Length: 458
Image 1 (cartoon, rainbow, N blue to C red):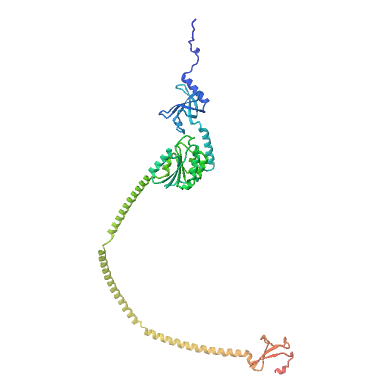
Image 2 (cartoon, helix red, strand yellow):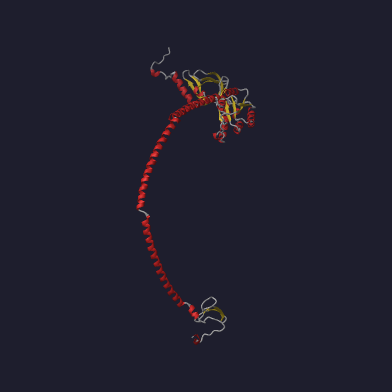
């Protein structure tokens, strides 16, 4: 019996289109594997003109397709190639157009760089916390150094690039090469020994440099001992390690970091050609300014010359002016003399009319009258004063003790010249002084009587 199939729509199962299936699968996978780390070996590496990277990541039992777009692979600090062991981070997806399982990569590094990167970050935090990255502790690079110490490998590309730049930009500068190994077991000791020689070499500036490489190749410049030796360097130091995307620990602690050895060489020295061009421009401007200044001064001098009168003409004009002034002076003098002569004549007439003879006669008469009045007044005053003096003398004579003394009386006084009028208070032995009309007698009291005979006094 032949097999039959249902032909109604309700009997048919629900089917997905291929694109819908791939889309759902992609969504499911991306949600499950949003960010994964994968280690594997690169193979079939392709770099089309778009700048994207397409490659296969494999191990000994499986492989997976990968894509890393240009906006992400620019940050990769390595040159990937077939056979390299790498660690990648990305999200798992499906390329819907072909239904291919793939990983979209956003980070790639060498398989051995993970531990180094972690150590680098830890040391970076440590040194930064000590302030070794601070700009305040760094020294400015001299503008025109005369002596440079170059610490690098004598056989690397960096030294050729640096010397070429210095020869082109600043020939004649003294360069002391301190050869060192820039990677390998002896690199650390070489660089430390080179930095220790800097005080003896006494350069104006130091350049520590090497070309690019992987993180492992540059690791010597990330060692703590090297970084601290750079910090202790007594001379300004420039660090230029690797390419522009590379950063070494010496870059952070150095006084100046340059992205490449060539860039460091250009930063450290001026360009003599630019200096010469600048000097030429300055000299040209000075020359032009001098010409303009001379032209300006010449014009000013010409204006002054136009204002200056010829000496002969000036003398002529001065002579004529002297003559004019002389004539005016003579005229003014004659007029003044005539004016003064008229005034003098008037004064003489007034003097004669007001002569001193009559005034002197009147003054003499007045003086004679005053003298007579004064003589009369003086005579009368002397008479009055003489009368007053006689009265005063008679009055004084009436109160004077002298007449009394002349009549036989005396004045008795003690040693203090005090008049003794009574015997009260006197004692035998008291010394008394007795004043007479014609002299004085000193006596001593021997006896005191309080009842003198009054008939004897009369």
